[in-house]
Length: 156
Image (cartoon, rainbow, N blue to C red; front, side):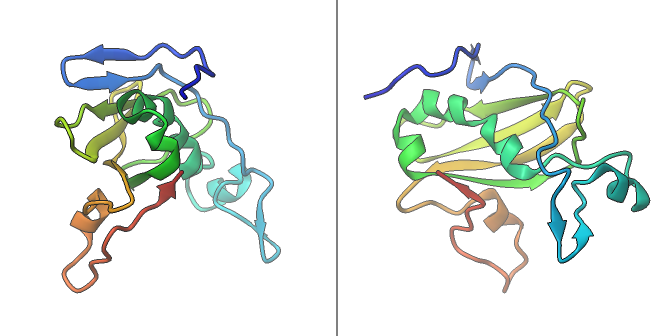
């Protein structure tokens, strides 16, 4: 059974599905590790030379859920996996849009990417359905000898 939970406008153009631009919020600003602040704290990030604290990965991955549900239905929530390579960081206030290529019929893997409103790439990767996930984007990027089969960063 599939339920419509969110009223999110999803665009379908040719072989690409996209969601709306979103402004992710910084959810980890107060996070501490062993008594020190994390990179997700604005002040700490600025001390390290960044313009602000980067938005955490799972917040970006959440922008893909409705798009991937459009492709694989509830199977996405039961056996989905995202593998992504971040190209640049996003700070609170930046607008980001997620994109998914429509997979070939019967395929259990597809390409994903996200762009800032400026056109700057945020991430690129793959999304797949298990239980036997094919090699992911990160698998491709691993150096020979470092290959880890089915590295999954976000699994539902």
